Length: 86
Image (cartoon, rainbow, N blue to C red; front, side):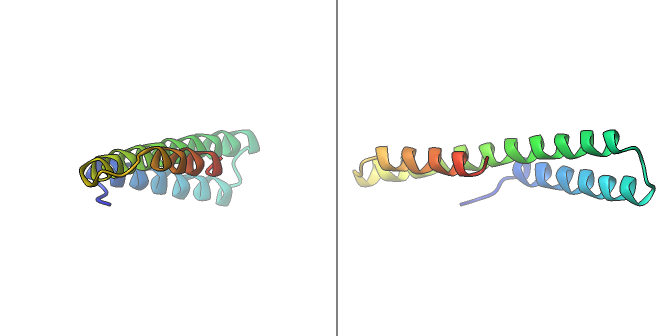
């Protein structure tokens, strides 16, 4: 699977968020602020997972169609990946 610049940039932003959270902890910032940032990071990770799974699904379905395979199993596998990620 190819990971495009959009996906990589999402992960880089998440990395920056995590560094910011660590800095907040080291500066002993308020718990509510740290939790807010952790929640925002989790949301960003969830969305990134969705982008990666959906992009992979599109590629897999195209390849399966070209080879004459059943795509139903691929869709089920993608849904399972999303469910497990939560």
